[in-house]
Amino acid sequence: MEFASWLDAAREHFDVIVAHRRWLHRHPELSFDEHNTRDYIASALQQLGIEPQIVARTGVVATIGSGERCVALRADIDALPITERTGLPFASECSGVMHACGHDCHTAMLLGAAAILKAHEELLGGRVLLVFQPGEEKAPGGATLVIADGVFERYRPEAIFGQHVYPDAPTGTIEIASGPIMASADELYWTLRGKGTHAAQPHKGANPIRAAAELILHLESIVQQTRNPLHPALLAVTAIEGGTATNIVPDCVRMKGTLRSFDDEWRRAAWNRIVARSKVLCSLHGVECTVEIAEGYPPLVNDDAATAHARSVAEKLLAPTNVRTFEPKLWAEDFAFYARRMPAAFWMLGCRPPEVDAMPALHSPLFSPDENALPIGAAMLASTAAAWIER
Image (tube, rainbow, N blue to C red; front, side):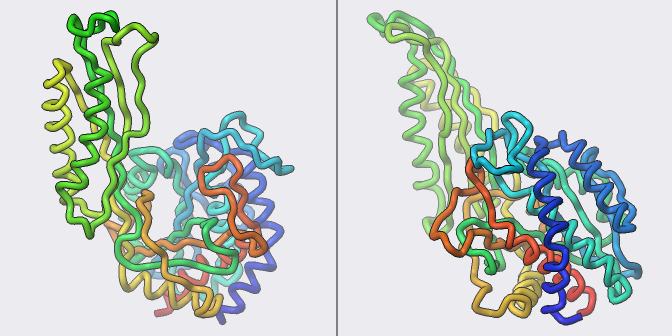
């Protein structure tokens, strides 16, 4: 089947793909609570004559085709705790929950790819494994649950492919790169316990706010002093809580932050530095400090061969001028867990309306991707899988 035909087939399913997306958008569910989303996906697959299997509690997998060879396609299905402000006629009907990261689009596009692949099942020289994965937005990540369920031992895919809607690029384009494209992401939590006192008598207390202020500034030096400046990394304190009045030094201050890196070795060494330096610096103020580090997703590293394959498919599907090199970001993606197990490629699907120069970003309550990107994403998934099997 010619690549142009995959795109034509996807466009023939445009109305259905959009209907899927809009239903999902109206009914978003948070990570690991995607029960209605799971049932909707399972029902949509059954209507296509594809038998779904429930995995990871709220995830769904299914296969199309037959034979020994297998390739996997993944879409994430969860939403975010954000109150939507798009004003769309199909806006979220769930208070405080929104598909602000485009997972409704990802799910709809994989359902569209499923419809195309099922209609041309006789052309497949193997099996395509569809992975509708829960909980991408929340550690430990739904990918870990899918893996723990033994999905890949049962189906043994040779490679896995995925995509993400990307508002920085116009509809009709794809951005992709091999190697590290997204960072690891660890959650950091500090508790600083001092001794409360009247603000006018600081000598009678131990001020955790002063310790926190110095600690925040010092933490930045861990990145600046210990990593190769050619290797990106970031340590940011993003929340601080403590105190109730203008004249009271509190007993306790709590802080939260994130650590991001492409270098796993440096990342793990940084954990120890963060704990040790936090304790030492706070002790200079007579403040006790405890640090909790919640290990998050590893760096996402695109396999060279899988990336070259996906790029080749995209160039034939859309023309070489519409396939660009993705600039790595310090974002994080639990697709990285799959990429550690098998050859993997993850690309960014342009979804900015061509008539505008900028649009609300991912995780914005105003995020509204161009639905004309949906058949392109569906065709890209279907043709990438089919072409991999035919190699």
